[in-house]
Image (tube, rainbow, N blue to C red):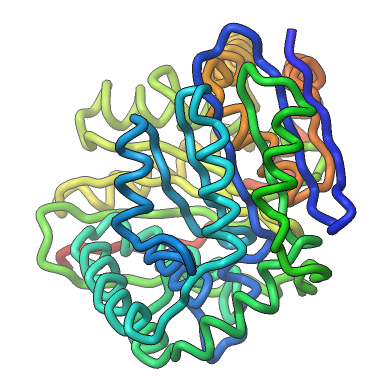
Length: 407
């Protein structure tokens, strides 16, 4: 049994704790409700820039003291930026829980944000972007997102682009932090063997200096789809991404879409894997996936193949979509997909870090946490009617195609 409890402090900060008896670690995360879609155009990439800078030190700790303090205790301290939130997390042996919570409180409420650190980290981020540009599959996925959400901030890469990263100033970073890193726009989650009251007390002390107030960003839904794109590149493979819009995060048909995705390209038993890799040997990596946001979603398929097979693989991707539209899925495929989704979900919650991330992510995006049994029941309830409905909704629109590779 676990014990998930959610408390809102007088500051407005939301704190969720989950006691998991028998675990040896405490995972603590701070999810901030701002991401790349919420940035002003002139400073796109500032969320990711700020994420980097919070590891450069605070008023009382240097960057080296932060990293050595975590290493000394055998822990993990990291962060990531997404389109709709930015996340910071620390996982440590339970006996060091107080240190981890206090560390996050220091970083999230008292970052130094020095001018020199901004200029130094700018170069690190430019190197990160250059590294991504050297990965043609990353370029294909990034370009696909920009075309699916043509002219909308959801189409931005959370890492930013070189021109904007070069132009962001220390005042831009500090202003963005002051506007968004406030109590009403944060969720703190701690999961481990400790009691709620003990963890709550530690969080309250660590985040005593959190800025009050704050509002969730106002978001506008994206407009029409853009067109596909071909990007010539001197690579050994052609990287193909094909797809379009799907369902928003709270759409009640999301579980049926999960089933369809698993049947199509979500695992080793999927149609894409069996047809394109196992039967024909035309790709090593081939899969499908879905992503959901507050007011929109994306469905996509990916395959990497040698140039002489690119047209054939594109035709096969389209053919598998056409088969789903025409015939739906079999009873056996439905059973396998539901078994995989429920089983993988349960296995994924075996560690404190996974539970923490799930709770924090749901609270910052929806304000609630769906109980585990309820989520399993939603997948288990998917039937052929639900599958046919979601196929008609998502897959019948002509997909857009992005390719990266030799002409």
